[in-house]
Figure 1 (cartoon, helix red, strand yellow):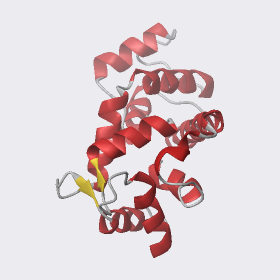
Figure 2 (cartoon, helix red, strand yellow):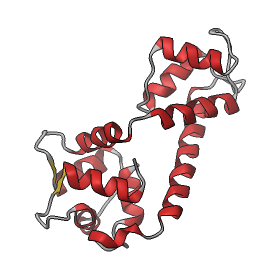
Figure 3 (tube, rainbow, N blue to C red):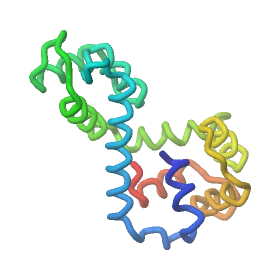
Figure 4 (spheres, rainbow, N blue to C red):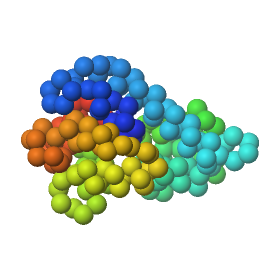
Length: 176
């Protein structure tokens, strides 16, 4: 999500404090992207009849980086009115995933995202880290795009992004 967000918005927005604008639009986009992600997960894991069972639900949750413990999944299915061997159609699947997304600890999620970029554990994201991440995600970014992303997050002016800066910006733009 972060690479997608930044490629759309970071270069066009000023670095530093001017990035508070359009928070409602970002929140709407975030919800829209989440709905698209849920739809894509359902389409990927559903059978030909447009339904998902326990095993597919568990696989979808794991693929989206959400908690996928057997007991929790079975309890969630039961709470939504489905037996352990039942099948979920899209609406129930979407409701469950939205619930799981809402349960996520925002700080833990942001730190996990930071670590995806900070592969060497240095506590910093450098332009090389962004380049590697964009290549892994098959997102073509120019050197200028990468520099704009670093500038957007880098409040200290050191040419890299610390964990604290990353969390601060993620909270400011509503990507927790």
